[in-house]
Amino acid sequence: MAVLPDQVRTQLSEMFSAKLDAPVTLQLFTQRASPLVLPMLPCETCADTEALLREVASLSEHVTLAVRDFVADERDARSLGVDRIPGMVFQGRNRGVMRYFGVPAGYEFSVLVEGLIDAARGATALSAATREQVATLTSPVHIRVLVTPT
Amino acid sequence: MTADVIEVAEFPDVAQRYQVQGVPKTIINEQVSVDGAVPEARLLALVLDAAGRGREP
Image (cartoon, rainbow over the protein chains, first blue to last red):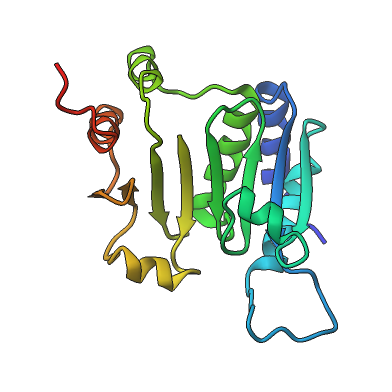
């Protein structure tokens, strides 16, 4: 079932063909639908997030979605710093670590889209001066941006 | 560098941990916290500061 309206799908396809010219993989850690009830790990937005990402990934040949199980693939989740679900990791030519936690819906949908494009290109909209300064960093920096969908 | 975006409506523990009263809220290295949209130059200054380089000439 389509999650995105036709108009958005069309716009996104066009944007991806214009701006996405290199491979990018989105590793989504989620909860697999299971006949077992796991009361300790309720994930209310996991199914919606997976459906949304599947649809977005289907709009560009350069986007690969890897759906991972947070429990079964716990080691990978840990090494990628995914400590909650839904959690996704953008892997393209980006040198830093880019992750998104939660469902990238509403205003946050553009974070997903821009994240895919930036990761694929290994580039950002930052000025040359900023990039120069950031390149001189010698200690790790972890930025967390806390958002809500509305 | 690591950049995380966290949708806190889904993760109230994160909202609580960082005492979120409004979004966006940016936390750098658990030391620096800034509310609202952050212009690039200010973000850079905060990043350099958090990384311990802010006071270099």
